[in-house]
Length: 169
Image (cartoon, rainbow, N blue to C red; front, side):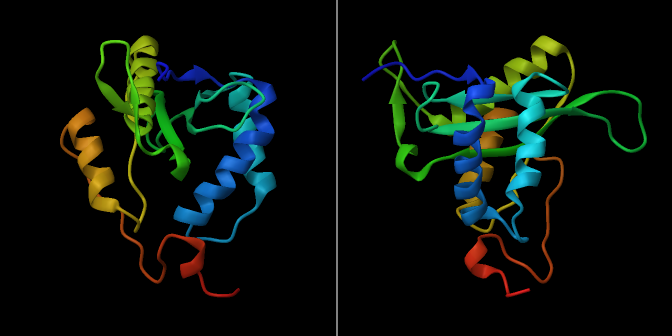
């Protein structure tokens, strides 16, 4: 088994990232979907404009997992932070991957590690969270192991994640 790595997304990944984003929406979305709005968030990050995308998978092939990170500011400050907009691992790749030292690491963990590394190298905080009704406890435990105690929670009233839970508009 090869050593799985996270690479920087490139413009040639755009269509594959839209495909992955649609799978993510199918599992975790709680509002209707607009692929062009997805593209408008993804494309600038592929050109390193106010963000970047960490990708697992070879260029011009199916993407196994990705994390979209954007540089932003909270509404009350001029300070910058790195905000995770989306992280998703294709269900076919949710098992662990082998490392060169014989240990295994999940794709999700690799993507979180990548995000921490980016935040450390830029010297700004990372904001990352879980907004899902699907395997929520497991996702929270993964983040707690890698990031420490949570700093709050999300709540949805009148909605659940996953497009099969959406009511017809």
